[in-house]
Image (cartoon, rainbow, N blue to C red; front, side, top):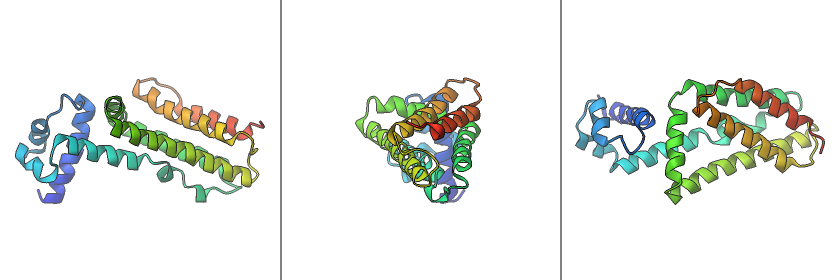
Length: 193
């Protein structure tokens, strides 16, 4: 394996093992064994287990950033509702396809209760969704799609529904998440006050 392949394999293996076993029960030795390298070889790529956890955390935060999933510029008067539904459906499907994302994200949530750095970063991600939905709904109001009253509350509704879809997926509930998202979007867009 070349250095890039080894690095990628370490990251992918750590992601899976941390999701399956948790941060506490996953050692660098376990990761190295799965990758097929010595434990000291991991230190060439990451100075510590914490550095590897930090790296994964930042990568996940980047991947779930609001702007990556909801491109406000793509929303027009003609496609606003359909685009909002589609963007939400795509995020739901991505979460369904990655069986580890909910598990590892739960590990980060737990870690955030003990580590302010993680708590602040997760807070920043959620604020990004609140601001993103607020900006998106403001655009919708400017386009005449919805009333401009209570846009912040409407943005909070979408953020809370979206966040809780992930929580319920994590807990293994077999709900029709696409329809839940659809109903939330339709209600928010038709709210008059």
